[in-house]
Image 1 (cartoon, one colour):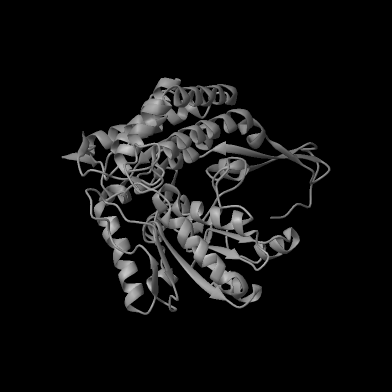
Image 2 (tube, rainbow, N blue to C red):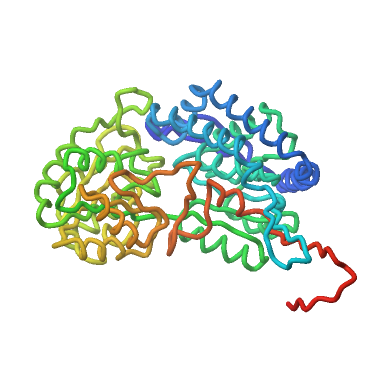
Length: 466
C-alpha cells in the first residue's frame, strides 16, 4: 500500500510513499536494537559532534525543508523556515550541554561509601509524532534522546510522510550510524505491536488526549516508560492594567500561529470586565486584518488547515457553540476557495459546556470570556481538563507572577505568548499529559537513573537497611 501526502492549500497530491511492510518494520526495529548496543557505548563527545552536524545539515537545506512542510501541511513559509532554525537550535543546545546534563552526580551519603547517580540510556524509543510542527516536534524528541545514547523510531502522522523521510535523511547525512534514527511509515493500528515489542525501551507521543490514553494503556501493560504531550486549551488572561497595544498584538499572534494549529496556542481569552469591550473591539479588528492565502506567499499570515476533515471538525465545533447560544463576532464559515481554508474567527458569550468552552479548538478560532475580576479570571483559566500553557497580561509584574503561579499548567508566562525553548522544560498536567521534554529534564526522561554504591570499607559491617 502507498501513503499519499496532499497539499491542503490546493488539494493536489504532493508525493506518494510505500507503506512499511510488516517484514520491513521488523527489520528496522531489529536494526535499531542492534545499533543501540553500539551507540549507547559511543563516547558522548562523538554523539554531541554528530548532533552539531545535524544542525549544519538543517541550516544548509533550510529552504527545501521549509517548502516541504508548507506543501504537506500548509504552514506559512516564513514560519516553516523559523521551524527549521529552531530544530537546528535544539541540536546545538544538546551538542553543547548533553555531557553536563548526563554527568555522574556524586552524592554524600554514608561516610564509608562513595555514592553516585548515573544516567544511562534506556534503549530504542518509539516516537509517535503529529503533523502540526512536523520537524520541530520530532527534533525536540530526537536531539536529547540521541545525545543520551538512545536510538529513535519515528511513527509520524500519515499526512506528512515526506517530512518523516526527510528527517531520517538529516541524521544519515550528519553521520549517525544506520539504525540510530529510523522512520516507520505504518498505520496507527500497528502502534500497539511496536510498543509491545520487547526490543522497544520506551514510547513518547505528542497528540490528542485520546491517543495519549491509548498509548499509555499499552505502554503501561508492558511496564514501559512513556511521555505524553497532549492537547491544550490555553487561557490568555487580560487584567485591567494590561498594556493594551502589546496585549492585543500578541493575542492575535498567539491564536493564529501555525494557522491556529498549536497545542500551546492561546485559545480562551479571559478578560476582566473593566477592559473587556476595548479588548474585544481591538482584537476583532486585528484578527480581521490578517491575510489568509497561499502559504508559499511571503505575505500570507494564515494558510489552510492541514486537512479538509480537520477543517470540517473545527467548523462543527463553531456551529455547535453558536447553536448553544454563543455569539459570532468574526468569521465562522469555511472560505469559498480551493483548499481547506478557515478564516480568523472570534466567539463571545459562549455558554458553559459548549465546545468552545470545554474542548480544544485546533484552528484560527478564538473564544473571549468576560469575568469580573482577577480571582474570577484565575478560576475560569483553570476551569478546563487541560493544563499545558497559560499566560497573564498586566503592568504589575509581581502581580503577574503571583497569578501565573496559580495556573494549573505546565507552562505559565507573564506578558508573553506561551512558547517552547530548548533551555526550559516543556510539558503539561491534567489531560495535557505528563513527563517533560527539552532542557535537563527532557534528556533524563528516557534514561536509567541508577544509584551506584561503592562501599569503601568492604570488610566492616554496616547497619544499612532497605
